[in-house]
Image 1: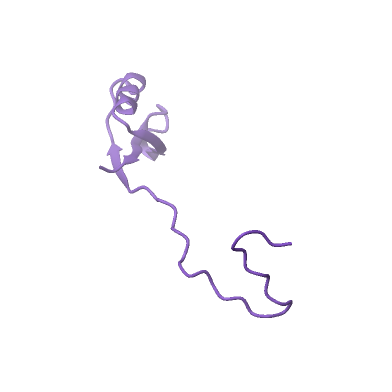
Image 2: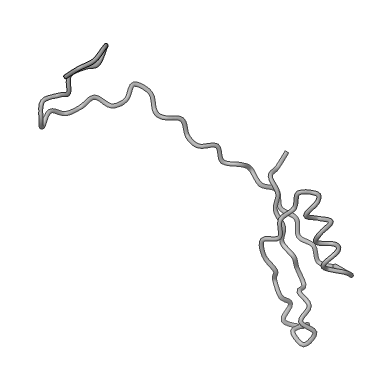
Length: 81
């Protein structure tokens, strides 16, 4: 049973025409990155960066300071713009 302006289905095994237009691609945000090497008070400074829209995505430990456990680089990102 067909309703309104519906087209009948193509016969089985018959090649179907592609869509007239490609579906829109999903929006992918552009990112900007920031590398911070010195944090005197990591918790409060990272919280401040978070309020500015930055997200911590990686911590790169410095092998020379592994005894203290301090990171040498904090890598952050946020949506560009």
